[in-house]
Length: 445
Image (tube, rainbow, N blue to C red; front, side, top):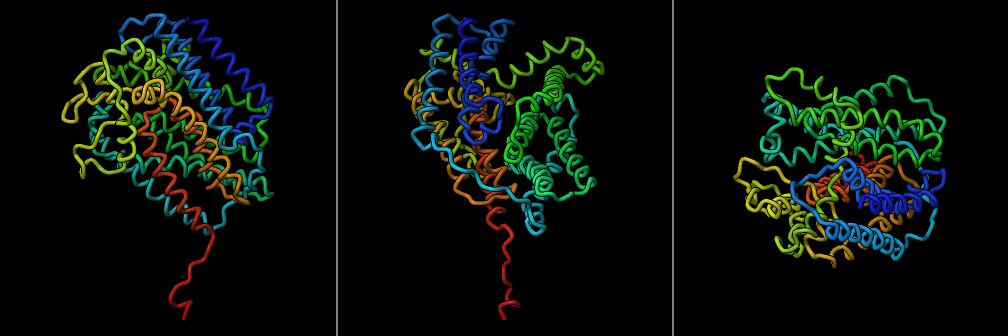
């Protein structure tokens, strides 16, 4: 089976890079290539690595038929994504808009609407969490953060605000302006502090999203020659090892074990990477479990979609608000193990192909895959219709590419959609205000 996984990964990877060539910015212009590479990585490469290292997330035996069926479903999802993208105008190659830097007024509005609220949300989370012992918090962080969903979503906005600041800095440089080194240091310091805060709170995925959005946004400014991007690999590898180390440490932390970090680090870089990547992107096994245990669960017929749509409503106003895909999958595997009033609220990360199959079976794979590709085409075509954009528009498009080409493939739909919706509304509000002046009653007089 490992051979089939590798072939799936290699064929999709070669297909995408044959079209991209040495210009990574082509993924920015045609995000379907990013989608194909993401499917290759999550549903081909990661299962292959898990086969080689003998890793399973769930302690159940899987037959060859279940693994093959899940792989075929992944191939169908990929194909339908490409078909949906092409059917909705993805084959057109429009000219993308010019990017101009933010004016002083736009910078101020972005700070007041995005930066300040998200900064205080991060401080609120940090202050709330600081009242607990680190080991205790890492053990029960989901329970301890119960009811803090709105604050987490607002804090996530800081990710996109940081990406806007970085993109604006490089846009100014491309325009021939000379932004001060002090300003760059302040931006990098704020972004680094933000990254450290999120990692410490157990949200390393937020930092990964920040890096991905910034790299995508920079493709609107630079050509993205592959030979130059290769130079980033050592830094990205070091970040990946650091994230994996912390992921392993936080699951083994004990209040009385001061040498935990040293003990985990001694395991070596490769085992840490495998552990970290499996924890973040190893959810293709969900599809295998569903195929191997098709008589133990019933189709949900859109239940997790409905849960995602109503998730922005605070649970304090709707105590019986439905679960998302993660808790539903948890209860499929271990019936009755996830309840709102329970002490253990651990769930599983699904990914859109998994939720497609949970809700509508094979039909869901076809429908969700096509819709996934269509969303990529719609986002690209909407962006291309703009004559000129600021870094706000660049980040909005980059975030959309990331989510529909990669993020939703490994995230739970409920959490991912809520963050995407709220953040895009805030970004859109600042972009709509733009640099326009608003008349006051005195000026009208």
